[in-house]
Length: 311
Image (cartoon, one colour):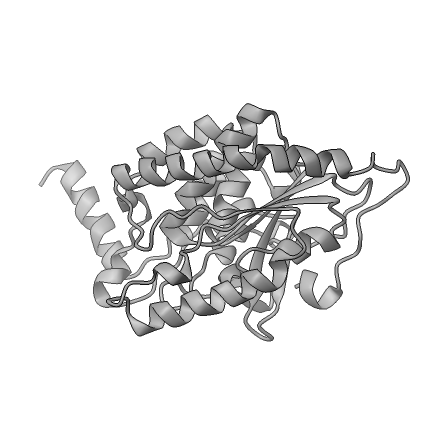
């Protein structure tokens, strides 16, 4: 047996045994929240949850880039945190589009799934950390916040410091698909559970203008064949988004269809639809920015309630 084949078989055996692919971080690198200092952000961009539907976020970012609209703060929930972290690292929307077409879903496959286990999300953590060049959240070019849900009380938790990939992994740990993510003494799951589109968090962090992107399905488009659990989740998510939508200056909710996928044609389709819808919103975005007064030099970001922001 060749050395390559022996190595491959060994790796496969370890994977099937459920080896831990997570990049471990030291205590000082664990994601956490620190009260921001300095002027409040003029414009916050909030990117919502949605799994593969999150490719649509890239279309929105393309429209914003072309219009010269640059956020001072990015907050992401679930897949929105993944797209948001990559964008905050300095990638352009077109850089992200190229990544979207290059992604191979096997990069994120874990062999434990063959035995009926839940994914760890370690591959996502590694992917994000690699793409951002190992930068911690506080080192990203644009201030970034990942929203997750703390299991102990079901409340939203925000991370704006520490390992970027681990924060994104926690933000997207969808129950039933991924194991909860341990950070410190707490376990965290998908930010979608507590706040699919964390608009209120952006306001509490002092944003004077909020652009929110909701990539979830339109409830009225739900087909009769949809599983009952999908319907319940969609209805729950719609209620939560509606409760926060009033605090957004501009809501972008492209209708990209009900069923999601990972094929390249699907990625291209949803990016194109979202880009078109976002371009139509540019006048409203410019108007909201014009209404926002210049930032007071002495103003600082509002404080998040400790029960929601800290871990």
